[in-house]
Each structure stands twice: as structure tokens, then as C-alpha cells.
Length: 225
Image (cartoon, rainbow, N blue to C red; front, side, top):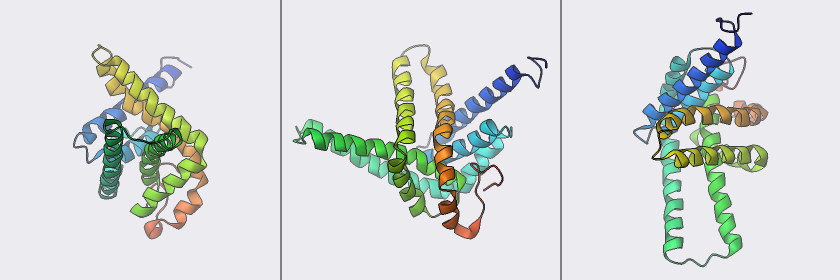
């Protein structure tokens, strides 16, 4: 086998790498209005599983297919998460600027709730990319999944932290722009390795609650949303 040929390992690696980066770029562009971050995240996960993990080589088409299909529902979920995030931000600001009196136990509980919130966001839009279901189920199931699969949830937190630290470390350096372009796709790809095994465990529950009885999408090897 020619190492540098179209069937060679180097070509295949570069092809996957290109699709990973391109999906991240699409996510950045489509997330600019802020309110579309949820739809962009759903589309990025969908395209990452199909185009990079399953080698279907249609990253742009897959991204915008999911973006359009889930736009309304993902936007509603984004608004919910923004409101919750704003409440957490205000509570944190109020506590530290007014010398709050939380004891150490309550303080750590508050931190854990925030971490669960961050993991739930990732699970929610990944779940939405795979199944059709009510917004209520898309928002509530991931909370239970986060708590029942702490090993994978901790992995997601590590990815969040690594991406944030890398961008913070590179700020005001020549590495910031390349990392800003690379990081969304890299994190999304890393998330799939944590999330896919978890979602497949709950496929029967998700299918039982799907609206209209459609088939699962990106995460399923046999069917498409």
C-alpha cells in the first residue's frame, strides 16, 4: 500500500483531520449570533460522528442538514441554558462581591452543580443530534445521564477544562488563532468518544419517547435521523 496514496494511512489521517477542523470552523461561524450555539453544537456532533467517525465524507452537507432540522428545538434549549447560566453567573457574582456566608460543603455542592450543568449541555445537544424527542426530554434525560455516568462526565469536564486552559494560555500569542480554529473540532471529536457509548446504552428509552417514531440518526450505525 502506498503510504501517501489515496488509500494510504497518511492521506486518510489528513482527510479526517481536515473534516474535523472544517466542522469546527462551521461551528464557529454558525455560533456567531450566540442564540444559534445549540443548533451549531447539534450539527457539529452529528457531522463529526458521520463524517469523521464513520468516514462518510459529507461534513458540510451533514452539518447543515442537522442544523436546519434541529434549529427551532435547539434554539429553545439554548435560551433555557443561557437563562440558567446567567442565573449561575449572577449568583456567583453576588456571592463573591457581597461576602457570602456559604460554608465549605455548600460551596463545593454549588461547584458540582455548575459542572453537572456544563456536562448536561454537551449531552443534551448530542442527544438531540441522534434522536427526535420532546424538548422536555432532551433537557431532562441528560441530567440523569450525567449523574449516572460520572466517569464519562468527568471526561467531558476534562475536555472543557483543557480547551479553556489552552485558549487562555495562548491568548495574546501567535498560537491563539490556530488554537481557536482547531479547538472546537478537536473537542467535539473528543466528546464523541465519551458520549457515544453512553447514548447507545439508552437507545431503547430514546426510541420509546421519540416523536413520530422516526429512526435514530448520527449515533446509529444503521439508520439516519
